[in-house]
Length: 243
Image 1 (spheres, rainbow, N blue to C red):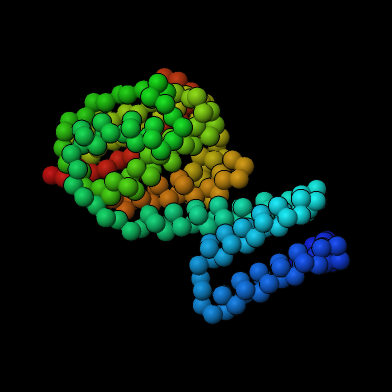
Image 2 (cartoon, rainbow, N blue to C red; image 1 turned 45 degrees about the horizontal axis):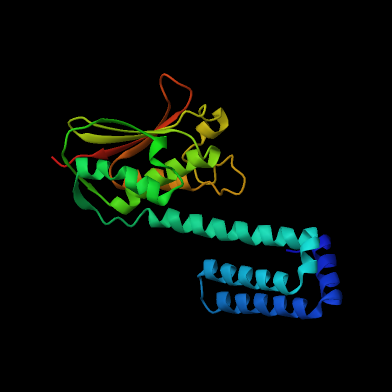
């Protein structure tokens, strides 16, 4: 629903830039028709709207001086991020597990992290004490969890050191992602794995909830502890071994 300020802005836009106003009206009319006809790919619709928004801003740079126009762009980008995150949350449920040997999998984590994030080898500290064995995992989804945890650290400090640990007992492989950045606030810890829980600007707060669900779907567990011996956070992935 529009409030009175929105209506004033739309009326002013129609008066000063009728071609822009008409174009936006066509976009929204098309979106409503798509939804009415059963098209539920809202993410694509929002992306198309944002593409038109950017095109109009290029053609009419004077719009970028209007705070309400800029806020519209922020709202659209937030919607795109929300739809992406919700898609990832749904993605957690579709497992395609394969049997993997532990040591080769763990040995490949450095390459995975450095190729998919801004981390560099010198930032990664290893603490490996695992025996070889077999795990049955959807590697793409376990990798998603590891990368999400690493990116959360790098979002705070892109030069932060991160400890990657791995050990086994008779039943499980444990993979730890530990930082040295002071731990989490009590408010965040209280709802850590709940959806839409974040203290970061422009973050929807679904990556940890998605990660938690991925581990549950593997009959495993994702847990959090304040790291021992220094001020920081430790997330641990617990994955069952194949007997």
